[in-house]
Amino acid sequence: MHFFYLDETGCTGADLISPEQPIFVLGGVSVSDDRWRTTTEQFSDVVSKFFNGSVPKNFELHAPQLNRCEGPFQGKTQDECNAFALALIDLVSSLKHNIHFIAIDKAKLAAAQQGQHAVINCKIPYLLGFNYLVSYIDTAHRSRRAEGRTAGIRKTHIGTGAQVSRNHAEIAAPF
Image (tube, rainbow, N blue to C red; front, side):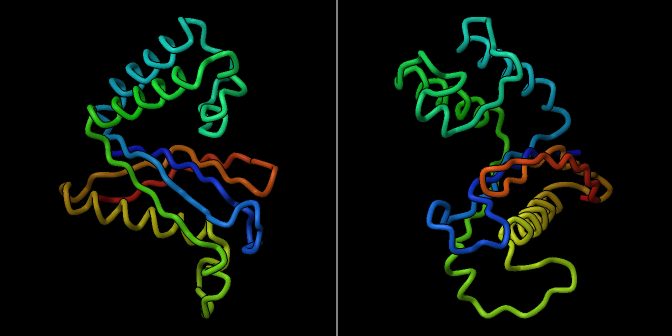
């Protein structure tokens, strides 16, 4: 079994001409169940070390805050924040997890001639990106794993403009 953590940025729903968010990106990491515990423990260790053992309550990692040394990163230097980001990237790399992402230029999507789809609205980048990414990950893991394996999508964040709502979804797919 594999677990996927997916997150997005630039989600403005069907508004494809937002000058503040012209690109939609959905990305994440897939972790096999046999490495999930090790990953969680090592990730927690890197975070705890960065905050000197005092991780802020309800801590969530957000790249814009990290890049600007804001929120939970306030008081840290840019060098410290950069080193933290590199430590997390090194962790994912050393554990040989797969990184997946799709970027959609919303202006080009708006200009494209598209017909109707029976299941999703292809003018909403999140739906289009999620469908593509889940299909891509499924195909990638099918090629590497025996039939009968499953994957669970554990958590996705859906953002609409300035408001962010959480959609906790578990999807089991045969691999």
